[in-house]
Length: 129
Image 1 (cartoon, rainbow, N blue to C red):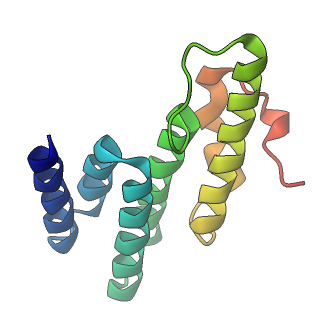
Image 2: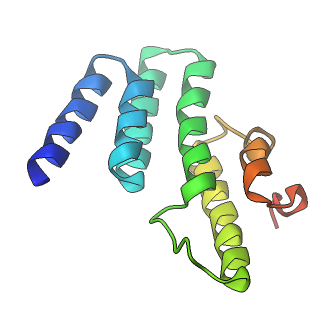
């Protein structure tokens, strides 16, 4: 298992070096959400330095935001009670808003609102306080 994980991390790094940033982030998301966030930041910096179009940067950050909206950072207890489930959804919203902040305006709250339609989170709660 350790060998497989390190092999995939090497693949993430190679994909990033080859300019396949979206593929690098998608593979990183299969490994670990924190690794994916780090990979997205690194890829976004490379893209910015190379003068990549804004849509490419937005695509990278939306991959991360969608993942966080669905799974959260660090996972969660799928067999939670209704009260715990509501708290878990709120936590995911806050984590997604952090991804929006981390993106440095590459994505906005309006961009990530659609990520929450499938998990029953009110769009009204997606706002900065």
